[in-house]
Structures are given as structure tokens and as C-alpha cells.
Length: 248
Image (tube, rainbow, N blue to C red; front, side, top):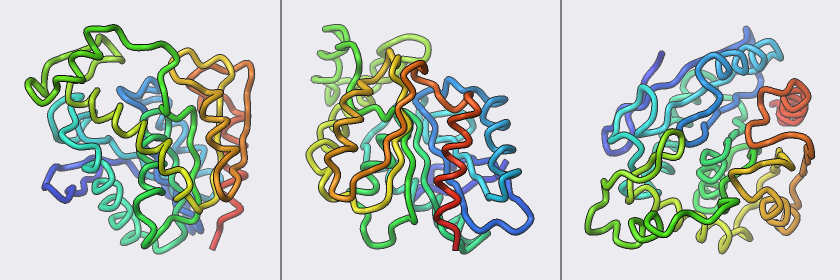
């Protein structure tokens, strides 16, 4: 396990899977309370490593081994600063093209980063079932908690994998609106990996979003898959093929 400090000093943990002479770095940003689990993420890292890549998996703030209040966000923009610090740490190890990969909530982070950080863009990005909108509308009390998050930002809401504070819920809602509004700012090659049976996020909306980008994205639609797609070998092969096109 390795660590990098976020701009506000929060320690962020990450794992490394490097081939002998990598020509592309893959930076992976997990979903909210990542459903893949440590074993699946490690298997994914080894697959990328075996493909001749360097892969880096960060625990986002408030999750896993990283610092920050559990399942809480003060400002969504903090995640963008975390991503930038993570990119610098990876570049110090290997100054090679970087491809960002975001899963679910991580996909929302990656898309917002592409919209707001044009100064030093990555070579490309991949998003899997990005959380642009929820498939089912949250319960009324959760929406009220988000609306009044300024009063009690750390109020717990949700259960299990859906647990988050009221402040985090409000920030995610803000980010979803911002990403949809500013999509025309995205100018990097993008691959969307979308499961047609996703019951958590609105995959058809993500498909429409991708088709209307200035630089039209590649969309891989898997009608038989649900929210988590990276456990499927065919999806991993598609990811590796796309990343391989951006070698130095």
C-alpha cells in the first residue's frame, strides 16, 4: 500500500500493479463503497499488469484505507484535487500517458475532472456505468436531508453500500447536474462501458450523454450485464484494447 497527501493534507491510500516496462498508466477510481471488493480489484490489477500496463487503484477520501470522514464529502471539488495529486504521484513513478478509469461514482469524478481540468489532460478516459443519475428516485427523507445538508452535513443517510452523509448526497446531486450541463467541455477520447440491466444508475442517460459529446465517445453496451461490469472478462479485454491505443 502506498500513500499520497491530498491538497488539504488528507492521506490517500493506493495500490500498484506495474509491468516491467509499462507504456501506459491506468488510474482507477472506484464506485461509492466499491462493490467489487479488494479481491476483485486485485484481480483486475493483475490483469492490467499482465497486459503490459501500470495500474494504480486509489481509495477515495472517506473510503477504505484513506483518510476523511466515512462516506462524507464537504465539497465535490476536493475529489478533483485528490485526482490531480494522485496523477502527480503516478507521474513521478512513470512519466507515461495516463488513462483515467472511473467506475460508477468514480466515473462521475472522472467526467467532472475532464470538464474542469483542461490544462494537463490525460491521454484518454474510461467510465463504467457513471452515476449521472440514479435509476430510482431517492426516498423523500433522503432528498430533504440533502436539501438541508448545510444544517447537518454529517447526518447519516442510507444503508449498506448506499450509506452516505447528507453532505455527500447534496454534493453528488450538485455534481450530477454540473456534469450534464458542462459536457461540451470534454475533449478527450472516452470509452463508456454500460450495462443494460443496471438497476442503480441510469445507463440509457449515460449512453445519450456519450453520443452527444463534442468528440463522440466509444460506447460499449452490454445488454446482459448489471451495474458491476469489470468482473466480466470480455469487458476487461475491451478496456485493455482501448487503453493500448494510447501508448507513448
